[in-house]
Image (cartoon, rainbow over all chains, first blue to last red; front, side, top):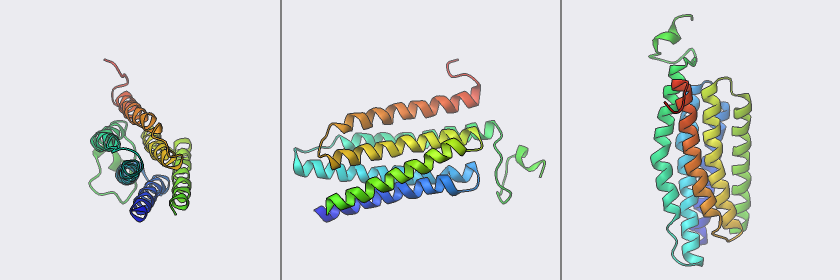
Length: 109
Length: 89
């Protein structure tokens, strides 16, 4: 069982790290949006499942970690959608190679 | 073995927080900073849960849940502010 816990924790931490590397490294806002909003929720999900398994084994049955998982899985798409909408509204530029740009972005290039 | 894995995971999540904090400071546009804050609070949830596993205590769960709720409200408020120029209409 310790192997399962270790694997879940490593997967979670790895995905969290990859999401933040994507946030730091990718070239413009619209590409940066992809990294954290997907990878980080999966990472935190794996860590929370590991926590639920650990506390179920060592103390009484503990399922309240699933509450955070559920909440994150509901709210992550909503916040990503709102951020993308705000970015388009204030006319954040995308990189040159982006296809199907909105009107404001392809004008002065 | 779990202790070693937890140390590695704590280091990885701390590095992830450093990277998103760098994006929060350096990010060229306002939505970048909002996204960095969003990532930062999700990383904080992961860090708190890992700390709860490390110290073998279930006390950190409530803090993580509160950060999840408040962080979402913060992200929505900041995005709404950029969209409308006002939060409460």
